[in-house]
Amino acid sequence: MKTLKNYFVMVALCALIFGCSDDDPAPVQTKDGVISSQSDADLDNADLKGKITTSITLSASQEWLLTGPLSVASGAKLTIEAGTIIKAQAGGTNVYIAIEQGGQIEAIGTAAAPIKMTSGAANPASGDWGGLLIMGNAPISGGGTATTEVVDYTYGGTNATDNSGTISYLMVEYTGARINGDKEFNGLTLYGVGSGTTINNVAVLYGDDDAVEWFGGSVSVNNLLVVNAKDDMFDWTQGYVGQNNTNFYGLRTVDFIAVTSDPRGIEADGNLDGNSPSDAGQSNPKIDGITLIHNAPVEMSDMVKIRRGSGAVITNLYVALGAGATAGDLVDLTDGKGVAIDATSITGTANPANGLDIADIKRTTEVNNVSTTSNGTVTITSGTTSAVNTSIFAWTGFSF
Image (cartoon, rainbow, N blue to C red; front, side, top):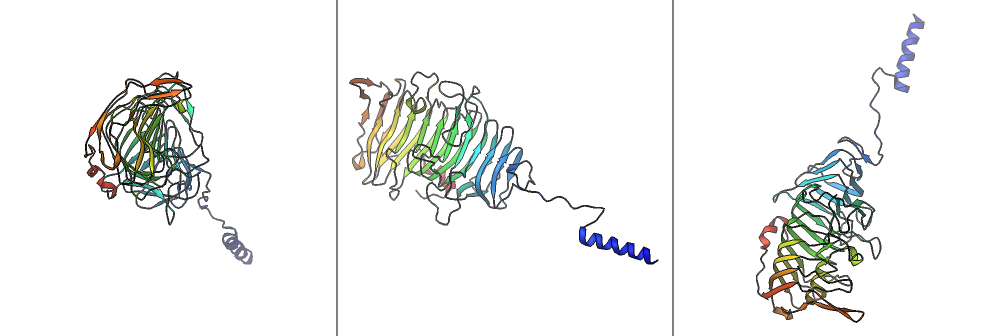
């Protein structure tokens, strides 16, 4: 009897000390930098970063703190619910969201519940984090593929209708972290993104570099608001050919005096940095409705700069300056690395108040004693009304 009693005591002690049981507890998950399921330990709302390799949803029921790179691999999808707030840890160039080639983003907010990507700093500022990058398989000038300006992702290809997902009612704030003087993030950067991608109702505010930049690709954007970009409001290069862009509105407020050496409303290159003038498939997008308003008492280098083999068909352009604001040129079609193509066509109005010269169209440049002229068609008349109504951006809460 004593022996049997001792046996049961030993079993009890084993269970108490060593956890002996017929039902072993589930193993504790550890983070490995890969998000492979909705229950993955790396899908942490207080420490969001890693590589997404499956279909993952960020719920609006909790706030998310982005602490490092969050990338979406080929074949994977990141869904962000309407009303979701993502706050990026400030101060690092290694904090950004990247959709890789073959990956997708479904960020579909609503006017009542937009999605917001912003800085997590107590006092947010331009350049706090990297922003949103999307890499697609659509063509770029010269063909083939290329590597992104920052963080080394591949983009470009042969699929003009490539689909990287859907973005709607999205606000992106305080982006543009700088790696060095030549490499910096933008707010929204579209690398070789195809026309199968849907992007509409987007606002990019308080960026330290360009607000939106297209590197090739064929995606179109509708209802795009830019407020207080330190560099360019709208920038395209390397063969961007989106044909159905509508309702762009770029604004620099009177108190936003931070500028780079050459800020512009539009900066357009046909090929990357003008270094490949013989490339096939250079930039030539269409935009119907684009407003550029510069109110700060600093100089914009140009309100519209189309150069280096780029073309564009722009209708319903509107340009205005506030008191004390200046611009080097209203429209400049020239550059030392090449002028705008002759097929370029720009029509619109400009407000002559505050010294804006509506006849200031620059067409000819001289390089090494050789003059080069763009014969693009530019028709600017006097006017005081934007064709883009700010009411379409009421969902942002921004007060114009």
